[in-house]
Structure formats: C-alpha cells, structure tokens
Length: 214
Image (cartoon, rainbow, N blue to C red; front, top):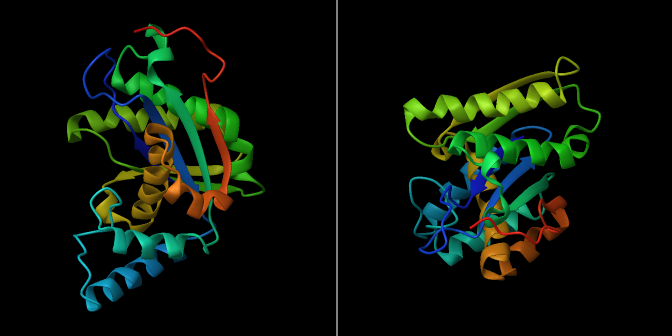
C-alpha cells in the first residue's frame, strides 16, 4: 500500500490554508505498476514531452497527466481516501501536526482497513515522507501506532517513508491524491472521473458535523 496526503496542517480563519486534509492510499498486489511508470516516463522523454525529475501531478503538464491517468485507469489497483474538513477538528484532534496526522490515519483505517487488507497476510505501507528529517520520526511513529491498533500481530507488516522521487508507486498515489484534492477543494472532478472506478473507499470523516472550531 502506498500513501500520500493533500492539504496542509494550517488551521486558521483567513489566508490560503486548505479547507480539507485528505489522506489517500493506493493498494496494489505488487509493485509492477512502478516498473510501468518508469517505462512511461522514458517514453515521454523520447517523445519530447516536458518531464521533470519524476512524475508529479501538480507540476506536470496536462499532456503528461493524460498519459499517466491513461495508465492508471487500467491497472490493478484500488484507491481509498479519507477526507477531513479541518475547521471541524476539535482542538484535542490537532494539538500538533504529528497528532493530527496520526488521527487522520486512525480515521482512515477505521473505515477502510478491512477493504485494504482483504485476505492478505502481509502488508508494506510506504508513505511519502513529510517535514524535515528531524520531524519525520513523529509522522512515522503515528502510522506505526495505528497499524498496531488495527493489525497488531495478526499479519506481518512494515512501514516505510521516502520521497516520492524514490519510488514510482508513490508518484502514482500522488496522482490519485491530486485528483481527489481537485474534486474536494475545487469541485473539479475531471481527473477524478478518470479513476473513479478504482475508488472503493471515500469518506468524509465529519460530514454530519455542523460545528466549526475556527
């Protein structure tokens, strides 16, 4: 399973803070998709399309995005997303960035862990690294704590954090997360519609809440 997030940790009334924090995971049976994305990038370079150091939905040109989504829509993968409207988060949910991130993972697995695991007996969770090297340990510890709560010793599991450039499958989930963010933040579902048939879990955690805490 590969994971990425969209939105920031800023909680404020004004400014450019995102409305939502979105945790998105992509579950695949193996890493064959990564090899296909590496081949695609080489093909795009050969065709003279503008490609950066790695595939990144926010920075890629539309012609590149079209080809990546064309690949993703036919792959053996599923997408799970948990959406948190930040203004509805009570203060105890967000005392620090690390705690809020851990809560996001808890809500995600609470709703989707059975769908994610299926009948598998082992799971490697690879998440895009966040923050500075010094602060990264706190985000990693949050995921590990949630994994222990939901899976314990029932299955073999490991966690990994690395930059998206280091793993093409993280670049794939970046695309999935970008499409999800465009839908929720901008009401733009054009990219989302290309992969919507792969989405098996999409839940807004506080969708019934009416109280905004800032």
